[in-house]
Length: 196
Image 1 (cartoon, helix red, strand yellow):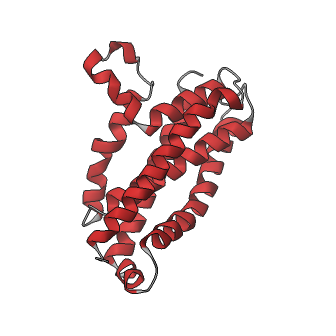
Image 2 (image 1 turned 180 degrees about the vertical axis):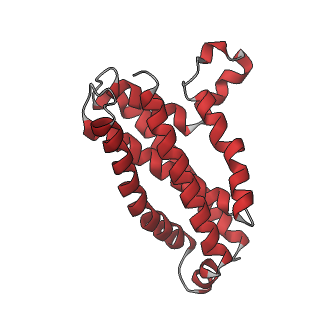
């Protein structure tokens, strides 16, 4: 029951990150992104379009994973399902924007996969799935730099402790901050494809 919320967040983060990264990489390698950059669209409009487009499928995928875990697998659920869904959707958007960002630095799918042990796996260790007190003190600060840590805390608060919105608001705000940060970096990274 204690590990379930962390694993739920991890699966959503992992699959969205992977699908978004590979999909955006294909957009680049097939020339779709270059054609968009040749149009009069602004960089933020292109990033917003991709986030909204992929975000729709991410929302559907995350809703299915969450509903299946809670209502079919019988994962413990003390709080409101709508709060869990809200946390998962913000986490999915964060994974989506991070996947799009890192795909900008990959030249093929294999390079995109190489980001998994660098970006995704460390988040599992610092998300609270393992006891953070056993980690060296000089390493424990890394957990505060990972989106999955805040998602896991919020999911545990709702699913295990039955917390309300006011208890998870700060974690959700930090997750949204990660998402906005990755969007801003995505807009900046597009400059390497088109100089204004």
